[in-house]
Length: 283
Image (cartoon, rainbow, N blue to C red; front, top):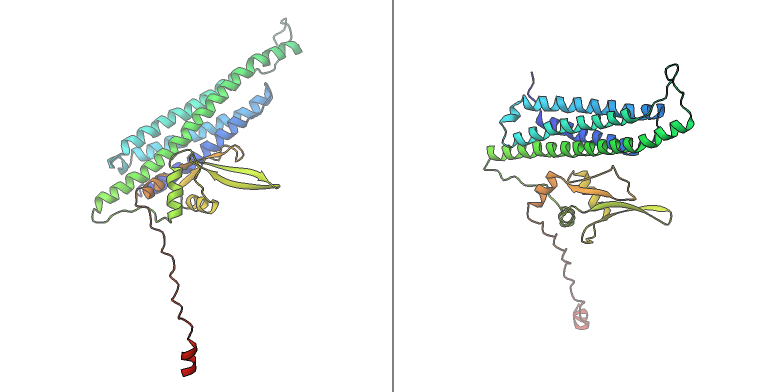
């Protein structure tokens, strides 16, 4: 059996986090009418949640039965991953509760009074708040699952980096090389209140980054940080309302380095003085 590729496991967890984020968005945006329609809309969400829970369990088992357990810091990652199995299971439970609260239509036993329109309206009025509450709880648990997957993935990457540093103490590990503008933008965004917005202007969408202290961050600089995976964006919310920007573990390591110095301005070559009239005469 080939050894477990921990870098690949970390990437798999990041992919899993994105799947949880997509499912959370579907749960938040689900539209239904109580009855058969609700069963048709919510049922697939429950099945997807169960699939993601099974995948989480596979990831936990792979890491728990690998040499990763000998890595300092691995206990916290495994413990967190175990709690995510619970969170995703609770999300499935909440979706199942929403289905249980959903009033289905069917014929009564002979001799019992058949439902009429007012009975169905009353049942729906009672069921909708309960179903809404269960769906909200499910979205919360899915949010925790997505956040936790990102946390564990970053933890594995950090643990591997720390282990490599300890194995080669003579080599100083440095973060990614940044430009001064990128470093300043990353430092501002590390405060945790940066958001990405898109606002209409003259009929065109204008994308901008808003920081907690008003520091200007150009879109070109921001996109460079995203491309290098130094920051991530929460795409579960609309750009019109603002998408939260988070500095990744690699970004934090880049900030731990000294701010790069600005490139020296080019010095223009000295211009020789124009020859005097006497000099021209001598020529």
